[in-house]
Image 1 (cartoon, rainbow, N blue to C red):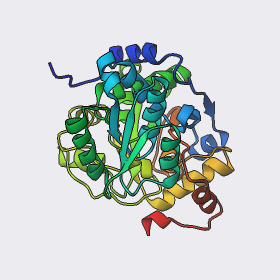
Image 2: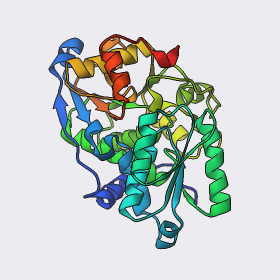
Image 3: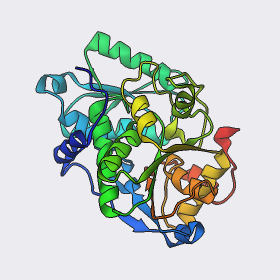
Image 4: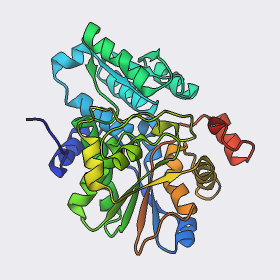
Length: 330
């Protein structure tokens, strides 16, 4: 039987499986954003996770779920950076081979960190779709096990452990803002939260430049979208025309999707640094950016996920100092 949903049972099992391999990250009240919104705003500090993003949860769960024979073959994935870093870290702990395929749009600092962790890096083409072609070749010719960045039940369940933590840390949350790209994070978090607290709304947030899941949801089926440079580079890439899980789960579980301009994302990065004393990448800043842009209304507490910190520090300096508008969007 083909799995069509990742449930609370799967997510709770994932939490047991990855216990001791990932951090339970804190959630803190942001006074500045609470004053801005007129309601309590809590920040889930997942950017402090080992490897610098939430991706370690899904990668750790997926690798822990492999058989001994599969582990011996090694793993391969396409990535915009953070999934590759997490997979490289989790594979290294198991003494496994890992090959990460990425496009030329992935920032150099993310490539260097993946190499440092011992994974093999393949740079292919100008999009996630191009990188995926190399993944398919390695699976067919070398027998590697593919662990995709989002459309996989073990990846989704691992990311869903974040939803359990958020609703446990803020049980009266009226609204949760979660990053939306291929949908592994958003669908896992929404599945956990809706099962535990059905009245809590979950809104996906993405960039306006190349938001594949939003375009697919609008069309009613997965569609191809041109991948464009963006400050939220971790949210780039398509969802796959043969998407098995995340499209349907996002369609059924998300209450809304919000898109942001490059200037709005930059404002989120600046606010996180200047007011919250947190260094986060563009994708990690989209929840804060949505609040600052006045795109969120609520009658109760909000939880904003800060999903990752793996930004090039020279680019970060330019953004927070106002020296660059959005070089990636130029």
